[in-house]
Image (cartoon, rainbow, N blue to C red; front, top):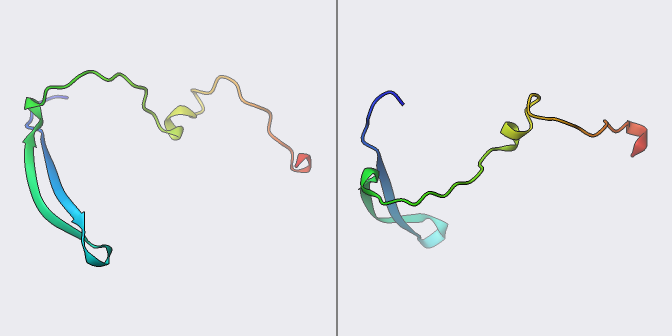
Length: 68
């Protein structure tokens, strides 16, 4: 990050209306800088992130078409 900025979250209250359509019932704008948070350390990566060529250490042998 290079600059400070205001970060806002827009929450939309909705329910499923008749025919499965969403019915919007209200909204709130939240200043996320005022939210008290707890640290939740977790590993987050997609399969694309994890299985890049440079990250794979070992790999099983390719199956030949006749092996199936």
